[in-house]
Image (cartoon, rainbow, N blue to C red; front, side, top):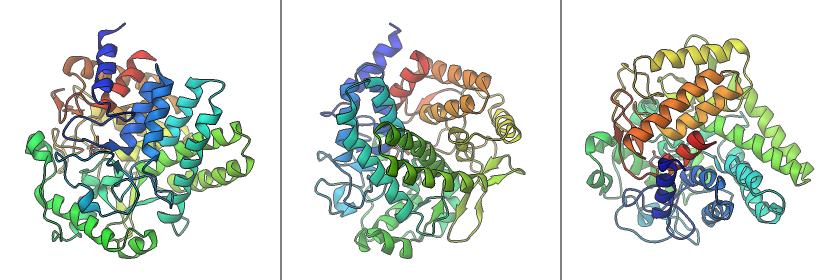
Length: 418
Ligand code: GLC
């Protein structure tokens, strides 16, 4: 077997904390939501029991209202800030109070298909959890029924420090009730991490929502940051398609109709966010009512979940080629050369294996297998050269951030092995 696959499996073993996988030791010492979904897909390739376990442990953190939190604090650790005492949530297991991109149902379908016949009983509770979460997205984060779901904290996007948030986040005060004691910069060079001022804003938002007792309607009313976000919505739609498929498999016809209605609404809403002049889809800032025009990877993620007209798919692919020109590793999370572009700083330029994985699937879906193959090769080569880093500097190819990273290992398995 390819030595790198062996190494990828070793990383998942090293990051196992008892049925769930931490993203990497010390920097991220708990269970993260979308990381675990990607990791479960990795396990699905060779150990479906462990893949199910990953998802089962994640939903231990699911709230009564259906929200699946972005972090489940299964065990205490003092190497991460903000911990449970900052979040002040009320679930039986300590969790954060915000969510993350809903990759869960995409993973669940893959795990179920890998497990084969007889897996229905184990899949059903996870299916129910996913359905509750999707309902939460539409009620808590799209109360006006637009079809686009909104984020109330940049960390909910998974692209925590993206230039997409610069304008919306600048309105958030830097004052906090909570002392900000960062731990991340003790593990990773500060030049690769968010700036202190933005960290204060991130915590200001946590304080605001904790003061709402984490009630979704109250938070919606009070939120100083509210972005109907294109990457999350596109992921929700792909997950919705997979959930609808599972509903039909399990004979849940009413559920299937309900999910299909969500999907139809969202499909139309995403299409309305296409901006031909930018050759991208855009998010909407719900506080200002304006488009978020920052040039980031998010605008291309709809490739994953829509069967686009050829002229739109071609325009997206051409634009992506233009951004990738001359880079050692594609795909940059920010357009090279623009004001917000920082090739080593967290989500402001670097290439991430899991984003590439989504884009590769999007290229395949939309009739661009050669673009898929090129990006697949570039991602595999970057990992083989530098190891399972959190992300890669697209200019030099250097592996950056945390090392021994679980989702990079899972992505490698899918991209190199399948
Ligand atoms: C960072 C990333 C986020 C990820 C987490 C754990 O916060 O921005 O997407 O889930 O690390 O890997």
